[in-house]
Image (cartoon, rainbow, N blue to C red; front, side):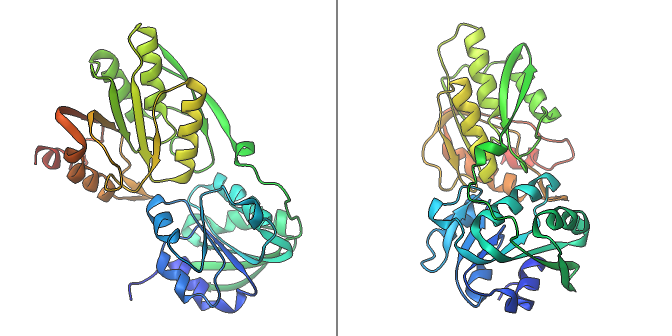
Length: 326
């Protein structure tokens, strides 16, 4: 059996904390679930893992921060795996308070290097007196109670909007805690948009891989409007739940024609496009990880129409050129 992430291993080490019906928020490895003493709700932000969870007949899956209303106040124990982004911790704790019964046990598990000390300050605000019950595998386990349960949880309440401009095109971009480049236009995307302004694609349909909050699609829509060109369809795909939600909101506000797919890579995406564009991720947490982009480059040819164009921006130190030439 393959090793689980440290936080998941530590939960199993403290499985006695899972009393009654549990909810696990931030699951990153589905093989954790059958090793838990009882099933409950499993939440993940990862589209690929969500597909696995959705076929589990014992656990109720939740993709990101959009639980079913009937799940409100249904859990006796809620485990919060510490998210990478500090701002997202408050959002995840709010979901825990919504899913947990009044007085339910709340458990926070995180690695020291990922900021568990700061997260516990946030935890104590909503869970009263909190206690550290274990420290192992570079992780800490803290327990408290659902002293401030929530009867309502709307993801739109956490939505923010950022006004951006690039190459003469203004756009509004939706944001949520944990989304890439929240509140700003990252340098890579800016460079890609500037090349699209200088050398337009000249097609009527585009796929934006790893679309994030929908910046590129919204910009292309605005660029075509300003130029008096016919509307362009920009479909997008992303693996993260918050990104998918934000991209759909950004598209809705701008009136972009296109569909946003929640998908891990391109294997589950159907269709061919005259052009595929991307500012692909190369980090998992704080570590450099090019595996997603390498997989994308291996799959993208099957999704390009004959004579289609791939336009990608990436840091010069990343080893993509050889893969593209293959």
